[in-house]
Image: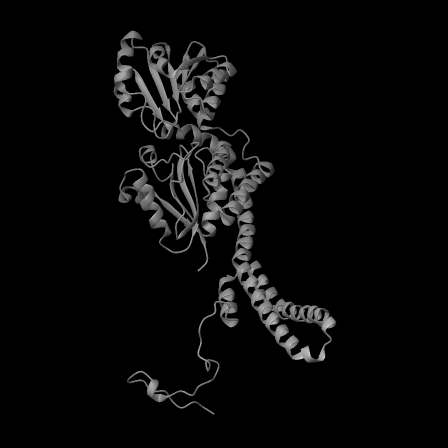
Length: 456
């Protein structure tokens, strides 16, 4: 049975943020061990987890792989598999390949054309390589995905005027405040999304930016880059009284801002409104914040309206990019078929060479009385060249036939199975008279069934 590719996941289309955060998987860390250690039937595996999707890419044998992965995924989050299953999509074989290429090319993103997803996939791949959970197929597949994404960026305008989640968050803030030149913003977290948000806030004319992060050095670095003010994480709530817009994007596993933290600030602010935009998954800000007077909370799913307006401009380019994905998927399928074919070619040639070696040894034994001792080595080399040359010539046409089948739409697996049985490459036991055309014995017919005599 051959290895197959499986992709299981949930994303912004199949699950709301409350489900995505519940089943988000932390995949980054200097000493992380694999969440899904390799064990039969799974041969290779990689986990991608972002604010808008969790996807698990696996290679293995057997139809039970999806269920086994789902069960382990749910267990890792201390959740029931029955709660996860309704939101999950499962792709197998070339459907999984096409989906991965589409994701890498940002065709499946909430923000079509955004560049961040490719970096996230590369980060997930490096993590999997470091954990030793990728091998021949996933290594080839991921490098192909990177080249497909590069080709899409080069040959289409899918990235032109593309927005990011951070851009959408700032656009939402602009709709709320209009002129932002008198407003103060705070970024909670100092990663790539916070950096993009800072850039868009400056372009929108924001008066002041605070940057709060658990690692103060990183807060300082980002604040210096955008002429902002760094904060240690424990200074966050002391400065919130001055802040109108809070954009949060940390990697915390639970909420870090709650209603009890914000409620005392409302009176100090003399009921001036505060706007929280939470673009983290799991969410950084507890939904109970939205119940406070003059406090407005938006999460990543609330940005969809801004995103959809931008999408219409790039639909035509998305169609061109989809054509590239299809062509590159077909190319990968050809390689995959040749990979499945390779062991059979190796076994064929090995079998032939073993037969040749035995026959050369027998012939040398029979020729020994007629050969001078000093000529034995030269005769042996000549016989070996002859025998191995015959093996390769005899197997040339069968191997060429199999390679041609691998290049065609028709599945090569059937022909591989026939070749392995025809040459008995799996060393199956067969009776000595299996090749004989034995006459039918009427006594062997099932009860009540009779067959007319054969025409001569």
